[in-house]
Amino acid sequence: MHRSNGPCRGISTSATLPEGIPTGQCGPRLAAFTEPLMGHFRQSKRRASAFLGDLLNIPCSPAWAVKIQNLVSDALADPYEELRSELAHQKQLYVDELPTKENNQKAWLWVAFAPLFTVFGIFANRSCKSCKSCKSRESRESRESRGSLVGHYQGMILNCDRAKMYLDGKRLQWCWAHLKRDLQKLNDSSDNQVKRMGHDLMRQERKLFDYWREYKAGKIK
Image (cartoon, rainbow, N blue to C red):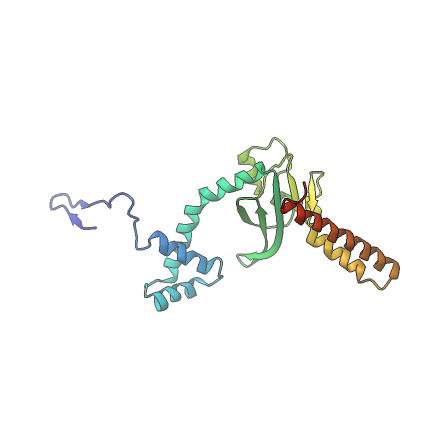
């Protein structure tokens, strides 16, 4: 925008942009394209800026790449918190966690999968406090200070593996992929009696999922 200096008081004035026009050199589409280069595709700031300059002919310094990343992070903060706060109100959730790194330190990437949306969160540890709040009347501000992903959940069915941080007396559904691996381990045993038990349990597991597929197809109720 054109800027002019007043001849008397030396005051600098400038016109304003029309409503809806972003400030700076980066629009929403460029920001939405640049941030995943450093997040999802794990490229360094220098490589992301080189990609924009060399392949897209958009001059970009590593410092500007950081500015774009912070811009996207700030824009996503409110929608992210809105989704995270909805997790505690779901009737059913699938949760899991796996190791990752944050600022060159070991951390844990947690995921909570609801029927209509999925929320990820990076926490410093794998304890139950990273997943949920422990007090039934805990306020939203208190949950945020504790850094839990799901918060307090009541009456929800939580689908998970058998990790000890989920064992708090709430309603749980064990992950069938983990159970099936355990049954297969019995089936592969060198002990014939254990192997027979694994074989029988695997047969029941297959029968269960045959019923489930028929239910999903509307053949049984």
